[in-house]
Image (cartoon, rainbow, N blue to C red; front, side, top):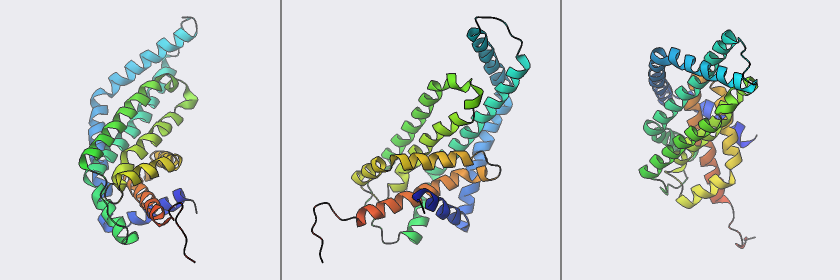
Length: 248
């Protein structure tokens, strides 16, 4: 069983525990309330502005020949707003969960699956805050760079998954190990497992678009990363040191 599949299996199992149920619900409800209100009061204006940009882009790409695609462009703009709405809700719930629920989640998993794993406390609140700021800045930068590609319909479902794959692993990887790993161990694991962390983040980004399962996605994401990274930390500490003599 691959590390990603194993982490998802353990994460789904952890969701069933009563301690995790409330943590699963309230961050998503708050995020839905925030972005639902934003969409209610500004959604029409955002759709109209986006439709205008798309119309200008199409005219610019066809040597300024005017085409009447107003109905199709209006539908496309609504689809883009919807595709952006889900990651925003998810990321907001994820950030709330990382601040207010991550410690409880780490304690829950560590006490049951990794009780012997020493806590070396290489992380800090300042480090967690800095990591979240980097994740948000990265999200904004990736969003700005990807704007031209959002206007290409086949790429609509792919772009948010690619972006959120990076953001997901960036938001939670630090907090998942802050209590148990040293700063050096965190750097080593993040560097060695960069591709796997991104893959796990992308898989969970896809789940956000699955009905009902998407409601569980932030909690599932946090639990999966904790299971995966604590498992990697345990394996790192059990691995023989290079050059160390092996006793027969």
